[in-house]
Image 1 (tube, rainbow, N blue to C red):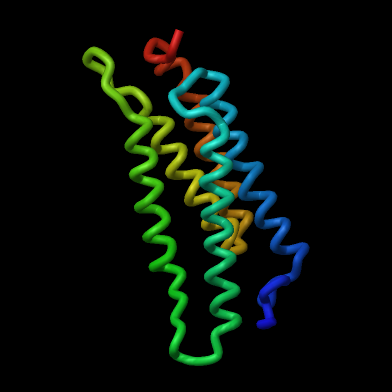
Image 2: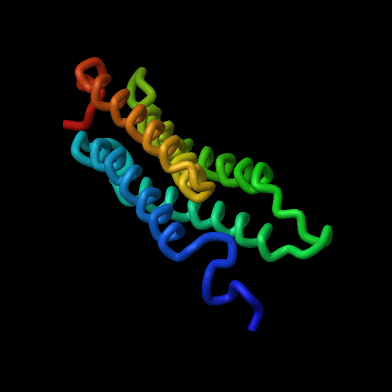
Amino acid sequence: MEAGTLSPIHISWAEALLRIAASMVLPLLIGLDRFLRRKPIDFRPFVVVSLAACSLSLTVLELAARAGGPELDPSPSRVFAGVITGIGFLGAGAMYREDSYVKGAGSAAAIWASGAIGLICGAGMLWLAGLLGGGVLLVLIASAPFTSRYDAN
């Protein structure tokens, strides 16, 4: 069996689990805000998107540690760009028009940010993921009085 098949090479199990946990908890808080205010996306996609993005980040790091030559170039920026593009399509599906208003833009942006949180957690910058998660949550909570007339009844 190849090295790294059943355990990480580049980072420790504790570090991997910490990154995975952060990628689950931070978007869960954002998703709970959306869920409690009855927005078009409940909390689950936020966590799933972030967890998958974190796992892809960890995969790129592990592939780089495993690669012994130029035949494999696991460029994180290319992986990140693909993930963020795909999450953009998911977020676009959360938006819809009702009368003269476009609803779901906040949830779409929040799910996109959750994907970014996952990528950042996977890259090991938990401090930055925490700042991003806190900032997104702050904006969503602080904007509630201004957007409440658009919320579901």
